[in-house]
Image: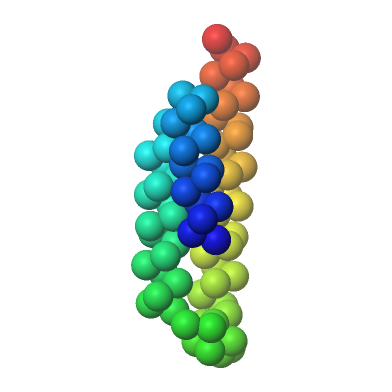
Length: 75
């Protein structure tokens, strides 16, 4: 996976994309993955936390898309 991440990062540089968000997300995901090993995620009480975090992420995505649509319409 690290090899593909490097390829994607280099390709992003070639097309002029801003890779800061992807780099931050990759580093944050790696740290989060190190803090929560697979066995921890299978426990019942932790599952509720993951469901809550997933719902918050979905709400953030929907809110972001709504704001994007509003900015395009009011343009």
